Length: 132
Ligand code: SF4
Ligand code: SF4
Image 1 (cartoon, rainbow, N blue to C red):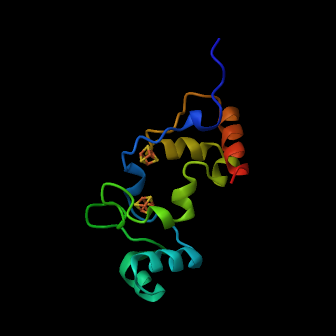
Image 2: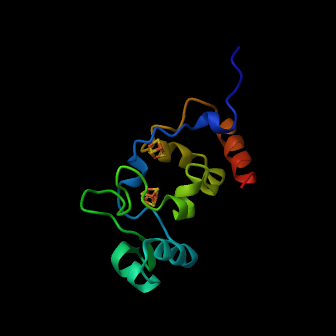
């Protein structure tokens, strides 16, 4: 009988870039804004004006005309300083709140397995979050 998947075995990034496409997903905190602004060589205010849009009152990374994140160019252009949401994907606290979020996320991420028990998904995500 095959063993249950563990840890990273429920997710293998296929480098397709699908998670970098679409509006409004990637929130950036004030600390992240400062870090990314420094990385791209502008001040924080200019960064918000040129590289962000707003979801309500919160800044999110802007969407380029091609539908992708403004920093996507075949790969992430700010990889060393990319926002926490991007670094943690798909091991997000929201999956522990409701494992249905894993399945919803998997609709747009071919690297995420959905053929395992929800309890296993929850356990794997909890373990990966503990390691951070
Ligand atoms: S959508 Fe999923 S598999 Fe594709 S690049 Fe993003 S994380 Fe990787
Ligand atoms: S910051 Fe990088 S990883 Fe995050 S959505 Fe933009 S291109 Fe993708």
